[in-house]
Length: 322
Image 1 (cartoon, rainbow, N blue to C red):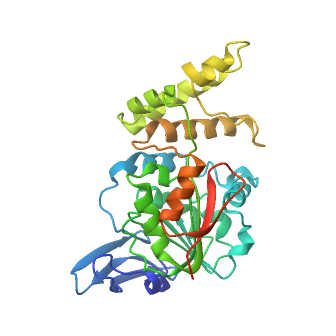
Image 2: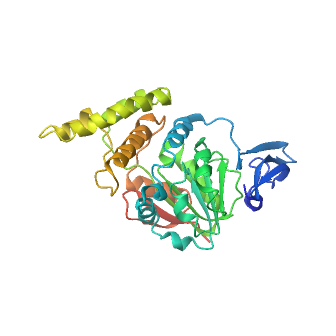
Image 3: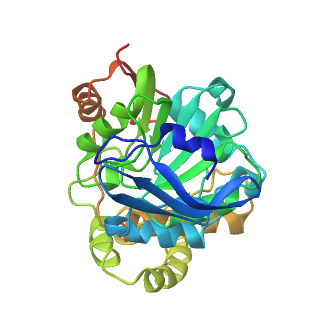
C-alpha cells in the first residue's frame, strides 16, 4: 500500500486512525506490516501490499476463485479494446477523464477491470473487495499505477474514513450481498458531502428462471469442479442456441448461457467471457434482481439526492447532500 493511504483509513470499531508498525517497503510501497489501533487493540496485517481487514471471505469465496482464473480476461489492456472503458462510462455517466483530481473508490473491484480505466486520471484510486480477488487486482495494477491502492474488506466495515472519498462506483456487486440497502448506506457514509455514488445492479428476471436452478446447484459445488463443468457446458449451450426454431427455447429455458457475439474480440476471447459470466451467475451464493423503481427507492432511502438514470438498464447515480 501507499503510505498516504493511512490518511483516509480508520478503525471501524473506534474511528481512530491507524498506526503503521513493522513496515517493510518495496518500490516505495508498504509490502508488509501491521495497521494498529491503540484504543481498540485492533491489529490488521498488510500482506503483499494489501491491508487485510477480513479473515473470512464468507459468501464471496467463489468470486475470489473466479478472478484469479480470469485474471486478465476483461482488462482493456488485454483485449486491446475500449469495452470496459465504454461500459464504465455508460454506467456512471462520466468519462474517466472526469475523475481528474478526485479520490475514487470502487466497491467490489474484482481483478481491476474498471480500476484500470480510472487510475490514469484520479488523484487516488482505491479498489475494495472482500474476496481474494484483491490479489489479482494488485498484480494487475500496482506496478503500472502509482495512485492505486487495494484493500480487502467488507463493504459494511471498509476501514475507510467517513466523508473522505469524492466518487464511489459499484458495478454488479451490490446484488450479491446479504443486505443491499445496508451496503449502499455504508458506501454513502464514505462519500464527501456533494460527492456521488454510481451503481449498476441486475434487473428483473423471470420469477422462475432455469438459471436459478443451475445456480442453486453450482453455488454449492467446489469452485474448481464448477469451472471444469462450465468449460464443457458453455460451448455446448452456445451451439444449441443456433439451432433453427429451437434455439430460443434452448437459450432461455433448457441451456441458458451468456453470449457475447457483439464484442469486437476474437472468438476464443468471446468464449472465455461467456464462461466467466456463466461462472459468475451459477457460482454465486447470493443473487438479487431489482426493478429500476426498486433501485431508485433504495438510493433515496440511503440518503442520496439528484438521482438520475444512466445509459445502461438499472444503472443510476446519486449525490450525497452537501
